[in-house]
Image 1 (cartoon, helix red, strand yellow):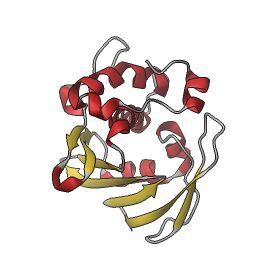
Image 2: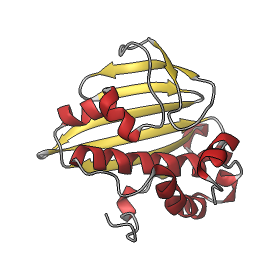
Image 3: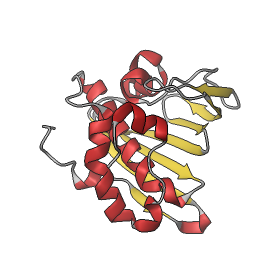
Length: 187
């Protein structure tokens, strides 16, 4: 994707408020087999290209995890591995969010279904834009293409779209002060 192109409509996450839960669901088709996508989801040398934190802890269901930001000074977040079923399911608690990655063979490639579950509606547009950007970086990592832009530039491009799509109630909480200090104004 060139810098001036907008993401495909299918790349945007969908807000799901059914059952009193707050979730954003993404579906991405990746031109790589599930085993390769799985490595990108679980191995540090690949995670560092797209995931916003380190993931320290055993890769096993029930294991305690710790997450440290790579680009800014913040205290580590705690979490837990809820499910670890190579190469099809990875689910973990990341701070106050639950992240679920489901992989299924899709021809010669993979269908990645990613769901982020939230406790606060007000930060959903902010974080959906962040996960959208991370998934774009994941695809670039898998394709062996250096990212054409930094994650903060990706975020700034898609965030207004999520604010419009999800509405004002999903956009009452902006980026953390540490992010703004590291990346400039989030607008």
